[in-house]
Amino acid sequence: METTKLGNLKLYGAGHAAGGAYHHVSIKGEGVVGEGLSAAGCRIFGTGLFLGKAETERLRVFGESEFKSNLTSGRINIYGTMKVSGSLQFDRFNLKGLAEICGNMAGESCDVKGKLSVKGDCETEMFHVTGCVDVSGLLNAGDVKLGLSHDVSYVREIGGTTITVKRRAGLFNRKKVKLIADLIEGDQVYLENTEAAVVRGKEVIIGPGCSIGTIEYKNKYECDQHSKIKETNNI
Image 1 (tube, rainbow, N blue to C red):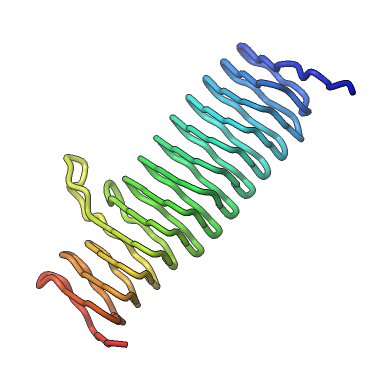
Image 2 (cartoon, rainbow, N blue to C red):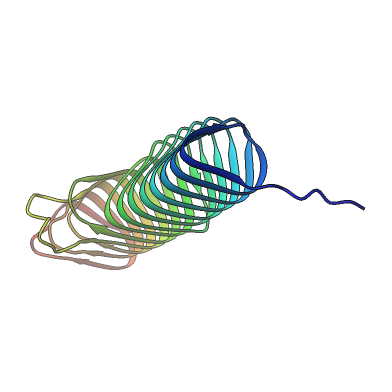
């Protein structure tokens, strides 16, 4: 049985290449890759534009990257910016910079230092963000940790086992930073600097700087004196 050995794609300076199956893709400078990319690994040092659906086992970006359709990858490391016009599927996603996902986002672990924007839903086992996050749909994760800084974060609904939201102290947090959500629901919930219509959980602890409409708890409830709660129900 014969096996086809895939070649490597290397774009240096400014270049354009057709999509297709490659072993490794390397862009140093400005590169444009056509529709239908499949590769074991992809590294970008500079700017990379992918015109169609892309699949890669490992993606590393040092600069700027844009995917015009869906992106599927095992491990993703972004040091800079990334935009995905479709949906993003991954195993491990690590971001230090800015990322915008126009569709849904799903994977095992997501670790962000910077800003992440998701226009659809986001589903992961672990979701850790230091900075700010904007999720237009549902954020569903087993372990949610948000370290708020720099700006206001928006998440329509958060569902998880353990949910921790804290204001991160720092020199760049001079203006008001907070999380705004319609619904936050988990087994164990701890919140700071959060505005939410409904918070529901088995154990709910409200730290300073919160404004909550309704809290529904089962086993435990605590509230900081510097937070405002309109209604509390033991369910």
